[in-house]
Length: 396
Image (cartoon, rainbow, N blue to C red; front, side, top):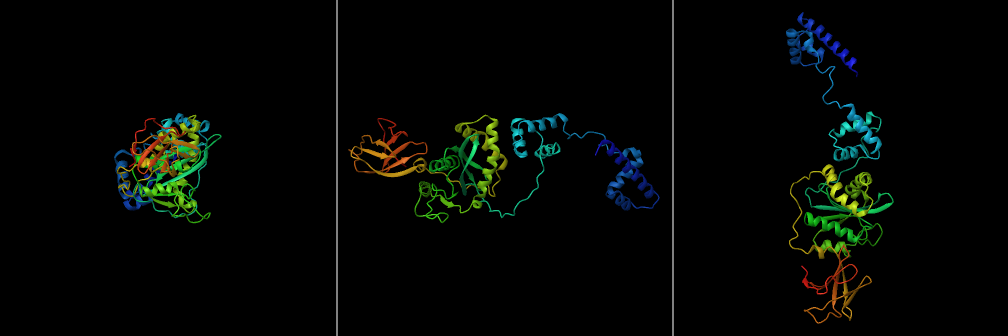
């Protein structure tokens, strides 16, 4: 409504009051009847009557008419917002654009103001709310009761397809670990679990799909084999963490929705920051994106209590790794994945020929050989001993 129209409406309102007031003075209308006709409360009519009798018709004029609202944005601000969106951020959703603007351009206006401004400028189209009716799976009430892990393969930067590994808390949808790898697998699963345990503690249950690094599934699409454990399954059993398989994409809805949000936002941010390599992308994800994502999308848990538990001296590093049995050769070496691991002399035995040992392979590629609880050799990823004079240690 223009200023002229608002002034005209104000004049009609005042003239109507004057007419109703006259009828009230002539005893044709009671206070309640006059208020009802004017569409206000009886108390407000008495207030208007008093002002009219004390200072005349002008005292009833709305002081806001003809004056710009203090909340009205300056034309320069509207122009700045619409220009930024048009020239640089058309690929963003309005919500993402507003969040980015707050972080990068010092936006002080609300999301709703930004949305309405872009709509009025014809840059966006209002969307209808709604969708299929879904039944919500209740969240776990406390942090640490259930942890989700999943991977998403996507073209995160132009021409580069990586797997994003995300580990999140069911109670809050807070991302607890996130990083990129060339291909999802056992090592990436261990890395995500280790991140959570290191920063928060041991958790109660682990919810994943039925990928081959998580479960053995004898029949495609069938039940998992609880007796035949993968390396991940073995490690979780050692940690006393329950491993729960998902049997449909809908069952992983919480993590799927998180990936949908990340895929819509993160590639745009990486492009704006000029990030094209995996290490830099993982660093940005960890230091910038995840804190902002959690601040916006994480929810408050039902209970402020935590189900995370301390590790109580458990040797997490030597649990969250690939463990395989080997027999020592006659030259005190162990063959492992094409490498020859030379066992150095030990004060505990003259030699280890024909001894049964365990080879641990860690997520970073490093290796170690254990004879029972005794570590008798640590190796670089290429199989070379880390030290010539290896000081033996006991595994926890």
